Length: 415
Ligand SMILES: NC(=O)C1=CN([C@@H]2O[C@H](COP(=O)(O)OP(=O)(O)OC[C@H]3O[C@@H](n4cnc5c(N)ncnc54)[C@H](O)[C@@H]3O)[C@@H](O)[C@H]2O)C=CC1
Ligand SMILES: O=C(O)CCC(=O)C(=O)O
Image (tube, rainbow, N blue to C red):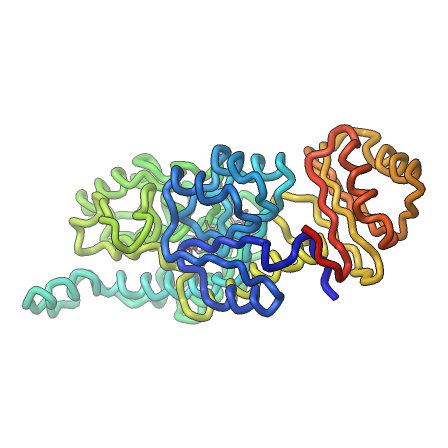
């Protein structure tokens, strides 16, 4: 039987931003029934109120879990990002409070890559303007500025899961692929890494960004970088809105240096479908604007729902933190006949021996134990005989540098 620290019906789960029903079904199947699912994100004020009693929260890219929100989340046990990016969460603030953060690093990779390839072909053919004219009753039948993809050069910035997947798809339609990455990477197929961002910008007919939001990628593309791009080239951003200076991009479109752009992510995005989208790019017919839907396919969302809810359930039931993006990774085999203690502490020397000393003083025999640390935090999972659950928990709470403790009772429901 799965272990649980509370009766599962008392474990409150809040899912925001229209997380797929597959997550709800999966949580129900695992015995978690106290689930609230909202279709939008929440403002900081609303979130601070709502998160107080929540044990697990699921978000996508829009919800900002900053220091203030996390500090208000007194009961929060884990965070699930039902997406790839985790830049919307203050990972250190979560770590400091002993809260692991999980994501779905691969489930929407293919969806983004397919969209970017499709946009490349559409832009090369001038479809966005032709489509706009036709909707207004116009008829723009012309081969001018309309090109085949075959033989053109696609420049990928950030050759990770999405960049590499796109590289394979792009070669299949005859695009030549070059890429720039801060890490040396082996190219898929005939793709070639270039030595600098500047070289990529100068050589590519289409530049597409697939980097995470980090201090090194913030405003990485501005006036200077756009001025290096070829006359008559195309630009795509489906990474994060903060990577590109959007005013500078608008200037490059006005000047005609860029023949088109496709943008899926923006520095400020509406928090739900009802809010107005404001952007200097709205005036361009040759810009494909999409509402941050690079990863929004039925397949991706269903898979993400299962993947991330599985990670939350496994952590809740067993203390497993494998694949967490901010936390020491620990997995101890399940021991159904034991109680399991979770101890999260500041990573300073001597904590483990202190844990063992206090448990020893209480006459508690440890039947299994596993510790992992990162720079800031240590996480130890300890199995003890069933007789000692509460007693062991009290002893552990006395250990200096403790951030958080939990006991997972084997097959017994406690408050
Ligand atoms: N539009 C959408 O709906 C979606 C957007 N995304 C965004 O795409 C990003 C990339 O996703 P993945 O490919 O899965 O990530 P990844 O982590 O597999 O790859 C990112 C790559 O960027 C490289 N990189 C990091 N900093 C760089 C820099 N300053 N210059 C050049 N390269 C740099 C890394 O070395 C890595 O190879 C995510 O972090 C997320 O922000 C992801 C999924 C959906
Ligand atoms: O689906 C979403 O809300 C965000 C997708 C995304 O940007 C990501 O996976 O990082």
